[in-house]
Amino acid sequence: MERSKQGSLHGPNEKRDAGESAGKGYGTGGGRTRRPGAPAGDSCGSPASPDVETWREERARSVEDNQISLPGLAAAYTTILRGLGEDPQRQGLLKTPWRAATAMQFFTKGYQEEIIDILNDAIFDEDHDEMVIVKDIDMFSMCEHHLVPIFGRVHIGYLPNKRVLGLSKLARIVEVYSRRLQVQERLTKQIAVAITEALQPAGVGVVIEATHMCMVMRGVQKMNSKTVTSTMLGVFREDPKTRDEFLTLIRS
Amino acid sequence: MNGHCTSRKDAKDEFRLPGLEAAYTRILRELGEDTDRQGLLRTPLRAAKAMQFLTKGYHETIHDILNNAIFDEDHDEMVIVKDIDMFSLCEHHLVPFFGKVHIGYLPNKKVVGLSKLARIVEIFSRRLQVQERLTKQIAMAISEALQPKGVAVVIEAMHMCMVMRGVQKMNSCTVTSTMLGIYREDPKAREEFLTLAKHA
Image (cartoon, rainbow over all chains, first blue to last red; front, side, top):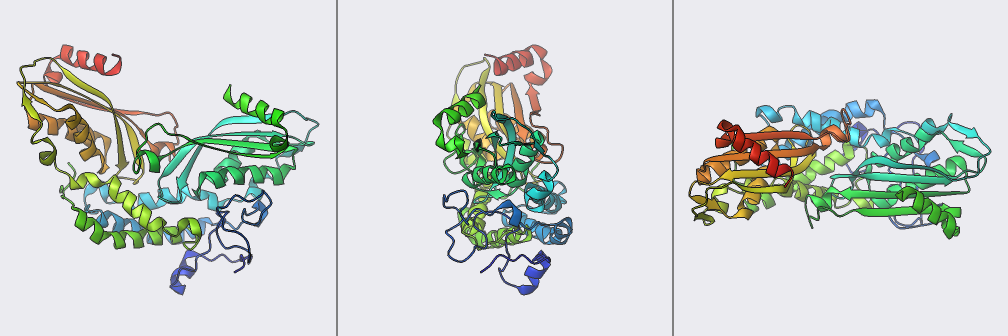
């Protein structure tokens, strides 16, 4: 099955009419409709492997899509409230289905955004060949396995090759990919690949330290556990000294 | 208070699971996700079970927990259990809020097993909640079980509905308290509790 590149999106109402689970992900990256023969979405391929969707090929959910899906989402949340034994008619819960639905759309707003829109005008030619680091970027995501928050910090470093990026754009790239149903490994890689493709730098390093509420609030219930993932590309992967410099600078 | 306090049982949970699963499948599709991709295949079931766990407080009653752990003890000084980790769900957005609960009480001939204070926190926090109501429910439960001279409960929590969305204030912390009995009437007792709970 091929990824659809047509102009019209598979909107939620179309999926309902079709009456089947034919929904195609709106640019989740990693794991949605794959090219034939491509490996499974969550495997660790090389940065250029087909299982990591490149940022130029994403389709976006739109504000109109959100408005169309809202009643269906609210109805699903009403079902959930009843299914938990609560009374959806009590005062505190009356508007909860709508609030929860809007909140969930906000938590997945990364599907509405495209890297190309964020980056296009903030790449500058600059003769700088030393490392650039933006660290302690607050990150909030949703675990795709339990639909429970993940939050933490992202540290990004890159070695420019004649082109630099507006600094806030690094944080915006984090936002686009984190505001989705995610797996921390994939999130780390997507951020690194997006920067690589936008700038063609000499190298990129991304480190994410995060707390997973699915491990803290339920399951093993380990309050203080943190998950750390990293992706090192180009000179950050090949040269241990560069990698060391990056890791030292983000720790200080 | 929490509307009707249903006592939800395990069998009922099992019975309700398919409906919850279907609701989560619908949510994933309405968000534009592909429910057939590998990472999401069992997500509706996991999310439904997670939500049942996060609201398991509806299952549990104070009566079951406390009945055999109240002891006659001639102790008339303050007892404090602080920094009890608490995780709850905002009933307005269905998004977690979490933090610490500090409990103090002045016994009146009866003391309670210390872990039972933490279990009381669990019963009321594992529900769809509002922080003000949670604080009061914990205080009232201890009051009714022990008839102590006073009960004090302070909760400091971070609300993901304020941090992850909406105003997006990363470092904001909400503090609520309920003071009953001598903690309400006597400023010195209240001060002693607040000092010990915060600093000691």
